[in-house]
Image (cartoon, rainbow, N blue to C red):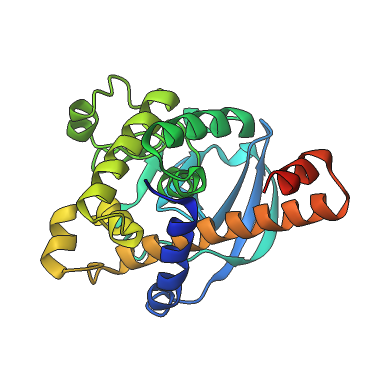
Amino acid sequence: MRSPLQFWVRLGLAAAVVAAAVPAAQAGEHVVLKNGFEVDCVRRETVGDKVRLYLAGTDNYLEVAPDSVVRVEMVPDAPVAAARPVTATVVPAVAESKLTHEEMHTMLSHAGTEHNIDEDLLASLVKAESDGQVRAVSRTGARGLMQLMPKTATDLGVKDAFAPEQNIAGGTAYLDQLLTRYHDNVVLAVAAYNAGPGAVDHYHGIPPYHETQVYVARVIREFNRRKKAAHGAAAQMAQAGHPAVAHAAQAR
């Protein structure tokens, strides 16, 4: 049975190795739109009558009307953008909505429990793949929150890749297959999710692709960030004598 701690330890040990191949972070922008949607981007670009917001922490960009931008704020240390814009993912303007935190948590928790995969690992993949954009579509045809290719989605029984619950279920099932293939080596499974298992097998490890190296490092950072945040929150609750934490401590 897979242990959440096992995932964290594997990722933590690999973080220094992968991070060494990844460029340092750069400044970005926090953009607020009229409809209340907010997005972090590494840069903006005007193309025709649209403005492209290249999303931070993913290979996607969002196209919006120029007058829909209400405010732009500089943000330090934004994640590095993908080095190959030709493979960047396009997010249609109609896809500016995201799931609520509660909705995402419920779906990821259910999928994680079904496949015995840490919810935070799934959330980290969703962040890296689509930044939580429900209707993200790549130029190669990958769709939805976990960017499923049509054939992969069909093989996994996903009828509508834009349906969040189906997409997460399919993406989690695929990750489960990769974890089984690589004997629960999370780093190799994540690399294969991005570059394909053929590339990982050929290079006997993380392929020497800049995009894949950045992707793996991004997932590792996000996963560790989530675990550290959860640990810090639990510590604060324990210090405050929160009943749930006290009960858990007594049960050990």
